[in-house]
Image (cartoon, rainbow, N blue to C red; front, side, top):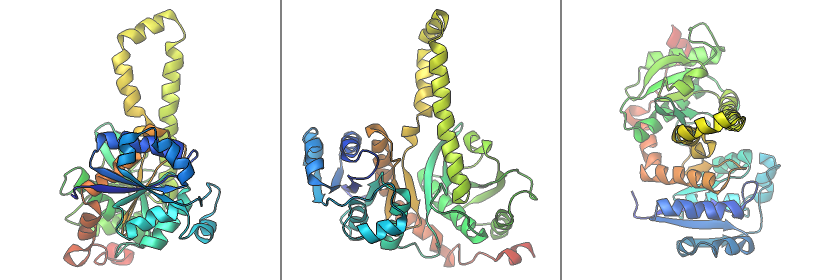
Length: 353
């Protein structure tokens, strides 16, 4: 691990921009003192916020630009208007140039993915990158991907997600052979689209030493922690993520309303307050904020656009951890060792024949 972790922040991304990014960086710096920040954005908006956080100011450098990618911009529009000039592009470019170890943005997801892919390119053997997140479960944490980078995908794409996810899980969870499941509408082998059934056949046939394929996992199996890695194409993965986040907020709101309904409820809350606080902390979506763009020649982390400072700090923490564990190099090694796990994958026809 380098003595200093250098993090480039898109200070103009998200619903609020610098008003969340700067205090979020200050919170993260308090947890990781060996961090240096490259703050990319409008100096006139960054500096007033930075003055409130002297320690962060001492650990930061501003790269000025007044060009921001809109949350409404299509990826193609963002590339045309903001290429080489926007805060989002310059934060990613800092990673490419070696000026930063990771870029973090709360901006437009499609634009961020398009710029990251265009500028950093994908790792050898990877056709499309994926948004990957750490998902809290009843048994600990799981790696879940893809959470919305792209929609659809053939069997080879799903297999590549499985290999990348297993590489990430092996590093983060210190497991030499993490378990991997494919998200499906049932556990029976006959269920699901043809692509997911073909991917299952390929993974069984490959019998890779770096992952233990356990079969299909239904939606409720994610929260149960049935596998260290859950693989899905981006459409279903994003729906699962948003449904889980919405459910967490719904349960929190229902509990809060019930606790206020009567004096008996309030008294009961006083006795169980610590348990409720623990539950609230474990279900807080902000603490799971930060999706890693996996499969690129560089580390990029996507934060929710509407998060608060604490939530953005967690996204920065994710980027810090990726650098700490030297994740990019280790994933690259696992993808391409022994001649390349993906290049040695049989075709769907070979797998089922």
